[in-house]
Length: 225
Image 1: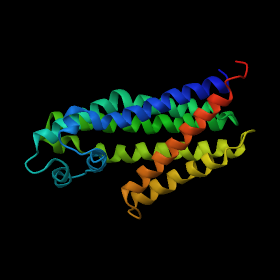
Image 2 (image 1 turned 120 degrees about the horizontal axis):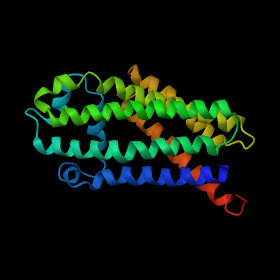
Image 3 (image 1 turned 90 degrees about the vertical axis):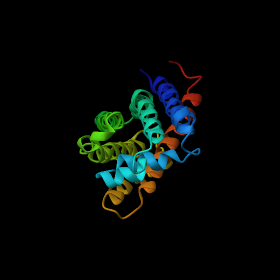
Image 4 (image 1 turned 120 degrees about the vertical axis):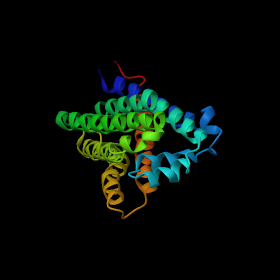
């Protein structure tokens, strides 16, 4: 596949990722409980929960069935649409950028580690919402896999930055933005910054990567395949 083909694929999967992310707010059970954009705060808190007291902050005490239904709907769409879309987006983007083959494959592996952690995390969340009375038995893997997910995505950002700085065609803005992801995830893990900082950094990284992908696809339109 040519860089043009990879750019088109990255654009498609990146737009699909964005579309699913926006679509979270319009799920009927979610819209019934949360204002637009509000669900993300509670999803993040759920993902970092380690105790029943943490869960009570998300679901209420006793747990509100409407919130359980909303989280179940969110995580179902996450598992079957959002995670596959962003994993394919990050993989296609790595090959689009050109440069060192080893760095490309390391970026792909990091993306797959992040997506794999996300799959385990999200699956455990679905198990928990389906069996809330035994929530404690489903908690142990959620928060650790949450950090595996962001560590993988953060490492992907650093490796993509390396591609941006070393490939024949340099992409300085994307390189700088990608470089921010892993340090901010690490700072959040040790409590130096709020969780919204690393989710914001990842969102900025993915948005920049999507813009670069679309520009590369459009510029390459007239190039031979």
